[in-house]
Image (cartoon, rainbow, N blue to C red; front, side, top):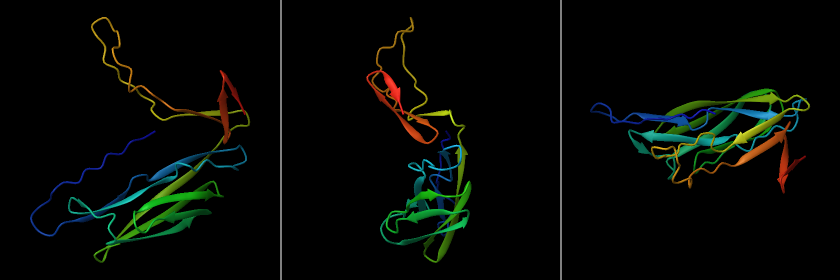
Length: 170
């Protein structure tokens, strides 16, 4: 997993810069060994647009569009919010071009998708929070574990493995 941190700061005196970025620029979809059943639930993000340091993404002053450049995929982008999603991926890779237009400035960004084909018996484990930090006393005793929750999702290929009463089953 990667986390991107974007910083928008005041610039020199003059016209504010118009900038934009995708909150998710790439996605790797777990798929069966033959490439079928790609997991695309998280193949989404928001196209953020800024005028100087002001977020102008919503409010109707930005128009958004999408176009699949390579591969075969189905993409959409919400014209009011800039939220984009890819819902099908029929080829091993695809690139989608998203454009935002604000005050005659056109910003173009690329979203890249790749399938990760699993071996027949391979399992994938996805953690919603892979890292935890706890405060301890001098003896190493943790006093508060309240923020230590993690959702664990397990897939065999692209098929979810269900957990019930201490057993995992497909």
